[in-house]
Image 1 (cartoon, rainbow, N blue to C red):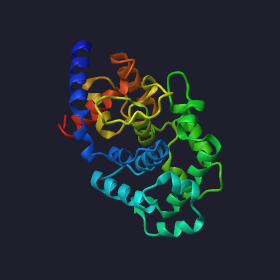
Image 2: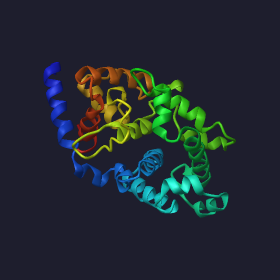
Image 3: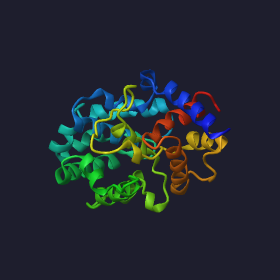
Image 4: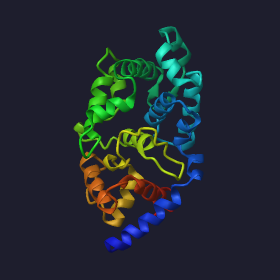
Length: 254
């Protein structure tokens, strides 16, 4: 497929799938429940953290998680006591359990106390063309407190060759400002041009079939290659094509 034809094809697919009906079956519906910036950030971050596996299970457990936080995530983060962690007993999503959740709550309070909000942290550590360095520093800061060793696996590190799919998805939710009404676009001081595609098995397989990704593994090196291809198609908003790649893979079995 010639580049002009490829761009036209992906633009059409991105426009088709980036529609409010997409929210009905996607984890992005959780941060859409809130209006306070901090509630949107925290609910989005926690939901993205458990966004792997069966989508129905992800949604059920994300709603359950918000209920455990009194449906006021920011207030819970900033005002909880360790006694509140007893309410988490029995919570589990695949390998993410109550121990992990308790530490995530503790670490998030540390982030908000030190940096005011998550946008400020990412603005501080971003590079000119990428948030991957900022993701690396987020993991360092997140686990700068005493923590269970088992919990570190739940935040990926691009510096260890991870594609960091879930955090890149979270960043797309927070930064892309769109009239389509799917992404939330609450971080006004960061550019969508710097976003990276949430690379997973679906987007990776479709990208390879379209010839915009050659590397076989879905890792940080593949993400950099895919980012370059997508930014060549649209340097201002490259990650809109995540909708096209995901939709083609999941809904059209491309």
